[in-house]
Length: 470
Image (cartoon, rainbow, N blue to C red; front, side):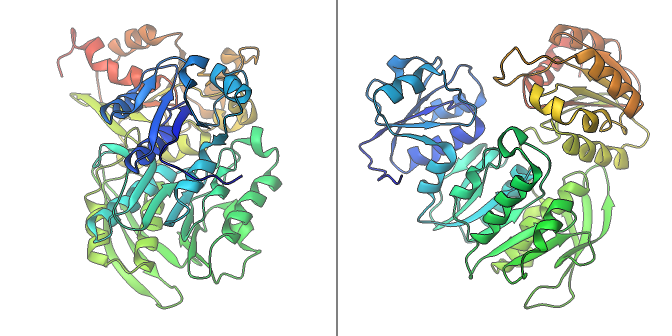
């Protein structure tokens, strides 16, 4: 069903506090639409929306949608939500976020970033490059870009840079001009049901690329490579450390404050074009690949190498992507979004390469019982480069409490298969108590997860300051 986005509509977003929903709300508001929304918890996204004069209800009840004409829901909204039930009773048009985002972007030329991991960082890198060029793009991201202090910005040009959510297949609702597939992992199988079906969705996404556009695909990823076998390559360019890549990464050198690498380009127009000494403040090979994806899109669009290199070198990062919280002598605390085995392993590999003589402590908050059950073996092996794991309670993210999960058995499997010391904590106060007793020596302490763990990490300085002055 297609709709006319008339500006007389009152559009209500259920779950407006989510990063994707808040980004959509900001863009639609700046386009002149009458926007409001609701959520059950106050967070930084709600704070940003309120500063932009967007009305936010901190509860969810049918009275909130009294005069509403259009409803937008995130994939996290359950069927028993009182606002959703009332909307159905009143026959109010209901759209998923991805579908509405597709409508909003339908008249733009879109650079769409999707995949299982690295989407937010890659989108942010492209946005930074474009912002340093003469192009002023609309940006819709899955995380707060530190240089912009927001996750969404309405630009003056006809270009948009958008992170597309693959969790519910809604990335197919956005028409790409250029697109990036970072990687494809066994994730969100409650929706896809099988790897075969997961591949089918991404094949359909590549097919949507117009003749004048391009899809950029990381060739190092196994499932990406399998999908590419069915395409003739005319609309696909590849990147990675695989020697067959059109954008071939070479000579990676990792340091604590920055990573450097070279790139050899072999595309339809250029042969063996060498770009040397590309520098990024980001950590790890996975982020070198994210930088390469961003560079490839910008290069194909004609943005100068000097602008691209300057943007990558001065990139200020993304909220919750290995962001330093504070330091005490030789102990450094970081906050990161990693909540999947692939993400955990990639982050720890990067830390290992530049903090070789530091003890590495992971504070891990598992996210969703369904994910833990599906990837239990992979999780248990993902902490091999850590020394100690502090395991927090499972963040269920709206999943029904009847889903049982044995956290003690899970902790044993991690300790055994990753060969780490492991401690279980039941709440944040137990975590703070543990940390007060380990504030000595050289340590990297990283909070990982997509739930409460970030709030806990940022409370740590105030919890221990009575004993240790930063």
